[in-house]
Length: 604
Image 1 (tube, rainbow, N blue to C red):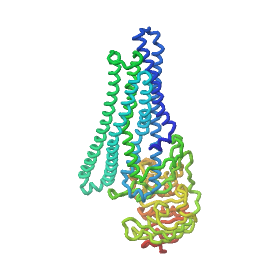
Image 2: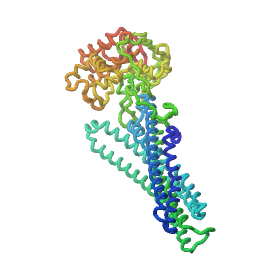
Image 3: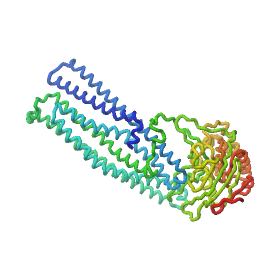
Image 4: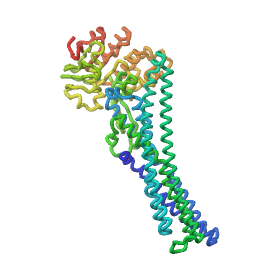
């Protein structure tokens, strides 16, 4: 977290420096106020003689209020910059690791880490850091300032002020441990609730909805109790602070009271009213930074617990400097996303409690370009050169499967060649397509255009390789927006043409809003075949050199399947096409067919 604080330098400098400057002005203000009171009470000075000092006091109060506002705004700005930077880094790590890793994770915990746990860092950067610097400098500085005026008052503050952080630290260790337990419980609750929500229809079918609702309520109650335990420790920390602060202020008041009454005389010079007022005014202000520090001390514990949970969920904290360098994230332009692959819901979907993954589709594995760079994308009318594909010694073992998915498999595709991939269900056709699109690690040698697959630049690879899975992932947006994901800068005419070629218009035109019809989450409102056609429309907006289709026409009727396949073959002219299918009629439309059996690729 300290490394993150070094990034937005200027906002944090303002957030930390403004209270320190306000402290200097506070000393001047207190001295002027004590002088005004001394002149009015002791010297009986006329009001006109005091107007200058009073006006200056008012100006100082306004300036200090402005500094406090500037510190708060700068702290909030720095915190937002850091949170955005961390979220981008976490999302980049999530996308970079791909669906294979995400399937092994609990989606609720990952979502909670990116949203809730990163948000828990806000208080650390916006409030705790400025308060910690002020608490470390101002109380001791105020005590040192009082020493020349009254050494007992200064010494009293020097002794009592450091005791407050000491005892607060002792209490804070317990608060941090409680915060860690609370964060872990909250993350488990997020995953628990997300799993039940995802399987709600199944629970209703088996009559388990009420029982699982009770389980969620019990888990929520456990989190509530942990939250209250953290609050109890936080209140104890505040009580420690108030005790020592009250002790110091009371000791100061007793000392000056006895001195003015003549019962105590340890000064070398007479105690004037101005000095006494000045010291009494500064006594509570000396403890004010410590009060502020105590009020935000729990932000540190919550942030440390959140950082630990993020590290546990993502197997380490992200390196944000690799994304933006040392520049302030405020200078970064909004993100533009160019979809690189049409998604396979198998890459996004995971089952409930059995160690499953976050919804990361191949659509999410997009070309994300930061800064002012323009999203690249070519017209589908300009045909890209097809890729030559060479696969040798491909081996892959899936978890929980005895026999390997791939066992020293080999495949060779000439540039522009069209090949059908057949095989029984579960033989590994989808896995092979994911391997060729670098979404799944494997052993072996894969060459695309005589370049090893591992050496391809991620951006270029996502532009030139298109993968459309069996169950495409659609977003809660209009049909047109879902199609435009293939090329975000596509014009309306290009979207309509792509929809026509994919036969999307056959079901979109009868709708009242046509392509502007809004879909529900995950494309709710469309059938499986309609969703496949929307995904194929994305393909027609792009210019890939290698097209990988996984049963992309399986849910279509025979007539529509034939029409869509005609458009696919026309679009793929000059491009390399590998189409996985179970249908012999589809395979017969392609010049060559290979079969995947027992981890081997053999000619049909």
